[in-house]
View (cartoon, rainbow, N blue to C red):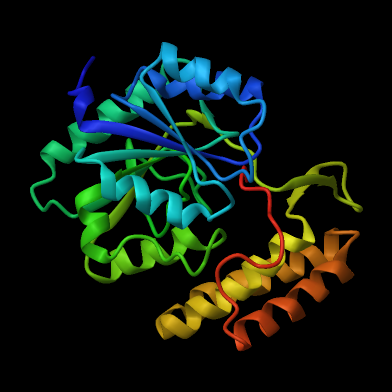
Length: 287
């Protein structure tokens, strides 16, 4: 091991997990000291396979006895561990062979050389929005929770994740607060992780496929964007542009565009009446 493994633990947040997802967990299991499997499912029926997995590996299973959201699960683990770094993963995310160890090693090596000590997170998701940057690391505005190596001390300093958001925009709002006080997020300039976002449906004009969330998830997204902007007025341009981008993409390419418009109206209504946290039914926490 190229770093002190005791410095790093991992969390994967699950929702109605399937046995084949263990293969994803194994791609980073040996790169951390402990893997916390935090389950947001309503029940733990037929979980013998995951109990057996934990017995044989450095893994601990925790059931939230219901869907309490991503922010709650992240905050819970951050508050109970003493480790400096937390690798946050989704159940449908995995590293390419051996790349989890490489990523963590390079991140911790970079952090040791960072005299300013102003990096709060390293992200394994290398998806530059514009031109591909040079160098092993590049600065970005946000890091999604999956594939993120988070400095737990800095996370506590900025106030942890906002549990009112429940799921969508949790990572963006957290990153915004970190950056406001001078911390930075760096992304690894290699393609080393696989992650699924949203439901895949065909573009009606071109042969390629595009990612769309289900309409219920859009209620969370729209509600939470309005909440963020109300909480942080300086986010209005950033998240406002993102909102317009999401709407245009769905109006042009999504065959269920009217469901998305209904979700927008519902999201605005939920925000106005301060209906935060979990909405009316469970959502797929694996995305």
